[in-house]
Image (spheres, rainbow, N blue to C red):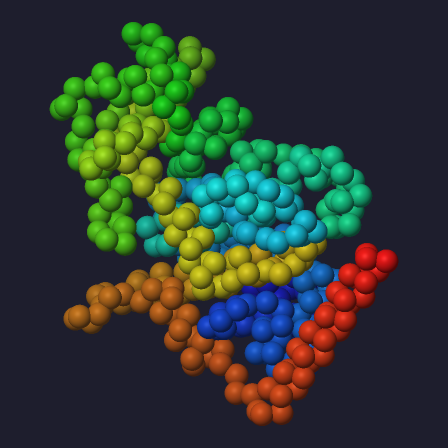
Length: 415
């Protein structure tokens, strides 16, 4: 918190932000302004709501501090930047960016908010560096709706790959060291992201569809057709990294791709085959010089770390539990949740460095276990009976006002 203290112009929001982050690091069953304010000892959620909506501080500056914090403690020579989106299911239509759209969280079309994230993945750990809220075209074509949600007037529609390209470029311009960039088919199918990386001489492993035309010396063929032409000896078994149940073992193959005459990089197609089902997946790769198959497989495996980041940040620091409707509030909640999660990731990495080996019979400390210990010894606040009863009365008064308001609205609509 000392690193970000200078981003707050007054002491009150600075202290409130510290209490907010402490609340995110506790084991509250639900994390929102009400529960965090009660945990902090406030008499109502008004102060926390003010921090997210009207207090004077810049969430993007705090994001820059989170970025520096993660790079300082997690950096190594083989860093991979990972891009992907995640969705949060929502009710109603007023929350910024909400519409019926496909989200991988539900694996179907649902009423949801979708945001694109950039994750810093190294051997020491992985944490989110940046975030962009996806604003659908149905919103950008409705200025009144955007104005009501606090969306900047100069914001225009941008696709998810465009948001990812913007984040990657901004991180590289800020000096974030990265050897590779990886992402799924949404980003591998976009020509602008790969062109940006090639212009910066950054290597990448980006997933593409089986129908993607691949130029080879023998001609241009769909990726799926090339895979079926490979001999059996071209499929060594390699691990894409550790999973929850052990190594992620797949059969892998590499196909050389013809590069344009003005290109200086080395291109190839990476093919992954599921040993049990035979399902194929494809990645288009580019690097400054030829890279062995094992190195490409290692980078491709890092793509899963962003899913682990989403799961950890949502489960531990409330990344998806924001109950806010406006543009500024969403960015502030998300940034503070990223800060809380980065603290857990860095603490786990530091523990791994100073501990040569876990005691016999014990697994290494995880982010979840560190949060439990931190909540028990640092973030836990003892509150008296009067405080608990006061909050019970506050909630009941709010619920009574809400019920009366709903009844009055229904009566007005019927009349």
